[in-house]
Length: 437
Ligand code: AMP
Ligand code: MG
Image 1: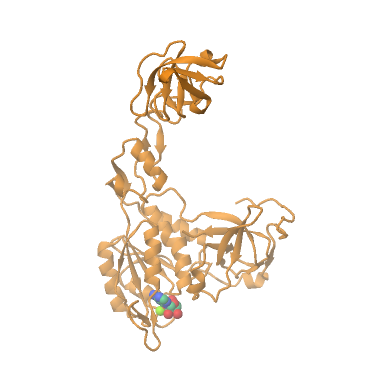
Image 2 (image 1 turned 90 degrees about the vertical axis):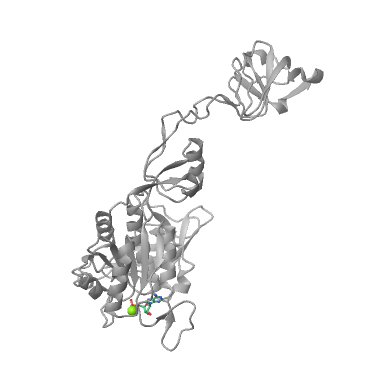
């Protein structure tokens, strides 16, 4: 991304510049982080290792949010005929040059019920919005500038009308044969109108990824349980499921597995039978009970990465089971889960669905409060986006208690990205932000 230009002080009083960064000492920055890969490298690996799912045919009623597996081609011109844009009178502009003038009303053209004759000199046709303009007419004068006389057989036009006024020419919007939506597009509500208008009653989209969520941790109890001593409720499975559904997946929840390698292995193998992707949480750090990597290894999974230069979310694991099912082992902290899911698992889900839109959209915002960076790791810090009176995007980093603070994180709408080895970014600087869905 090219650095934004120097803009001096903005009207908000925040001085806007890029970059204003203090660096860590060289020595501190060079501390060995051998197998750690960057976020960009991790995303590249995910794209390379994720196969597109096959397409399937859906009816238009079920297509919202799906990714098109075929181009959508216009089967008609739009509009399909010269169309009136206003209620009024279809006329020949040259007949109205000397307005006020009176013309004989010879017919009526309504939407769906046109007047299909030749309009001659001195004639007018009463016309409604959306109706076809009769042959011979070249302009529509709006009804407000006219009035009818003699029981509706004559109309007086009070003003001249410009040639072509209030007519949308046939094919002015789209010509038959044009591609109107490309394969790889995620269908939104407005696109439903496009599909319907061109007769796409059913069409090909990529299959929805099937995702299993699987939470590890002896401390976890289900949402409908009262946590006992040393216990907490599992919340990750719910946020992961929600993010996965937002990314177009169908989700299956696996039972809680505790921290037992054998149980985890069993659940992973079970989930792999039905799913394209498994997302686990917890158990990927270096503690005695961090069993996820061991379970994957015992299942002969191919590991692509196990540490990413990221805060929060360093111990993220990406692997593939022998049957082809991909696995993300996300760290247990709920905030790490949200960050790593959106950076990594969402990328895989969109790649599976052949989506051309990037999984994470980066924008530039003015930083409202200074933030701290990390040695050797990129930081993704929770923030809220707003705009100020100068229509600038502003990121307010949230005060939060770290990667376990999911209550603060619930207010997050974006992540502020602090590059690795940047010690701090001052308020007023321009920063990259990643909008969360
Ligand atoms: P771990 O990555 O397993 O060391 O877990 C890190 C932290 O996240 C611990 O405080 C866990 O209790 C917490 N945690 C792990 N899994 C979940 C979960 N499913 N829901 C809520 N918190 C969790
Ligand atoms: Mg754990």
